[in-house]
Image (cartoon, rainbow over all chains, first blue to last red; front, side, top):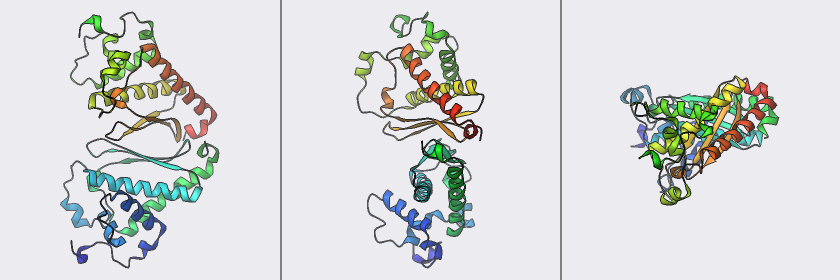
Length: 157
Length: 157
């Protein structure tokens, strides 16, 4: 893949946010062979952005492979890391997938469920833009922090 | 397998409990081909009981297969069903396994985590007796109901 085909620009301002930094950290953590070592952030996060055309090329029904699953995990791990950073309590992500690409993603803080999402079509996981991806993460983060704020005792258990 | 090799006696009093009834229901639900249709309860639940010798025959390190995984799921599904029956609120089990037989089993009621267990050595899943299995389920059930009692508002979310 040449640089020109990347969906995220090298100077995309979203790359400077806490969220993108955490996403890059999560992706590097999964990269056991150091393939990403010399890659810029926009290249590492590129697979998370799927243009409408790229999405159309993926069959509607399909089994998610390990690589896609690791991206889904990286996304929720990053959100959990940001929740933890904001509220100072450990946030634990759990993703339970069936083979057909359907499943449930949970983030818990103490005994509190701060995110509970049904995930589907995981083999087509991706966002139209990096900014839309950050919006989704921000939404989950703010709801999670609100729940922790409402029930700090349960979150502290 | 002849009747004489079963680990659970046909007249084991534990078979009459709510827990065993629910376990049999869960196992029958997984039995798509109706193989259990004419089996007595003690035969259906037999694989959950492993004598010390049977356990010794299973290698210490191993990958859990689909059949063992379905038993683990049946066990936590049954507990979730009992929690639901007792507190009247939906209890949702989630089991997240890695390929190596390690993982996390959660049961949530509303936004409350009522059980959170690290599971390991899943390929050797089993209890010394049916009664010990029920004890374990009872313990989880009573802790779960206590948590729901402490935080009914979060459980009702």
